[in-house]
Length: 67
Image 1 (cartoon, rainbow, N blue to C red):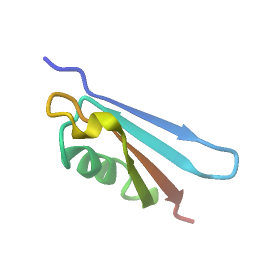
Image 2: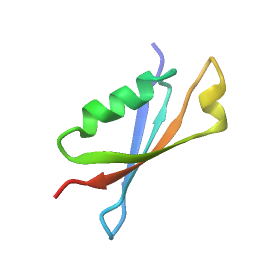
Image 3: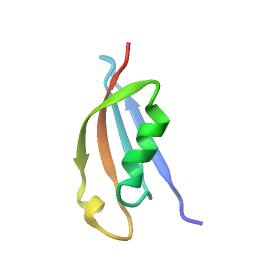
Image 4: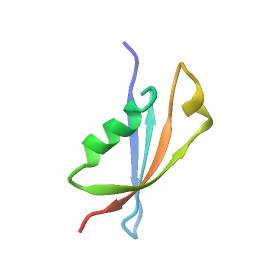
């Protein structure tokens, strides 16, 4: 079984940065949207070099809190 990991960091000013590991293609963004749908809106997506590899994709996503 392949390991899947989501790392979420919260800053003092309310910014959330989320990064996926082990999720391929567009599925990484879909998973983040489902995970955070009631908590935050995605503001921007920064694709890492690993995103373009076929064996492992990562994506770092900047998210704003919904208040």
